[in-house]
Length: 147
Image (cartoon, rainbow, N blue to C red; front, side):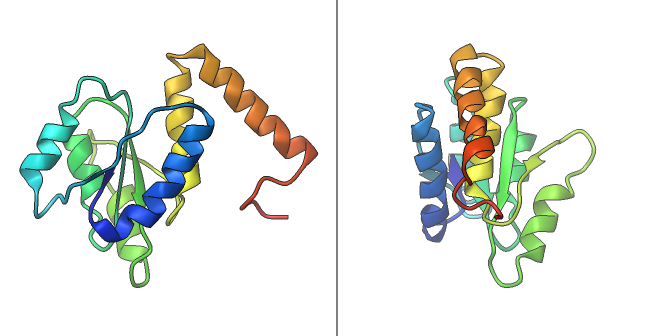
C-alpha cells in the first residue's frame, strides 16, 4: 500500500486492519507522486505485489501514477482533504488505458475488501473467507454499514 504522506497513515491503518482479518500481508509505504517519484517507481516494480492500494488527498495523483507504471490492479482511495471532491475526481477520472478501481472518500475498508476480492481470483481460500465475511451481513449489521 502506498500513501502520499504521513498524514494518510491513519486511514491506511484501517486498510491494514481489514487485510489482517483475511491474513493478507500488507506493507505501507509513504511515497509521494510529486515529491518522491523515484521511490514510487521502485515500489511499483516489486514482483511480490499482486494488487496495489494507493491513497492520497488533494490532487490525489498517486493512484494514477501507480497505475501508469504497472499492469497490476490498482485500487485508489481518494482522501477527504478540504472538500474531497478534487481527490475523488482525480482518482475516478483516469484517461483511457490507465484504469484505477476507485472506492469512496476515505473508504479504506472497501479498498481492502476489493483488493481481497481481486486476490481471491488467485487464492481460493480468500474467496471462502469473503463468503463468510459477507454472510455476516445477513445475520448482523457490519460495522460502518448503514442500518
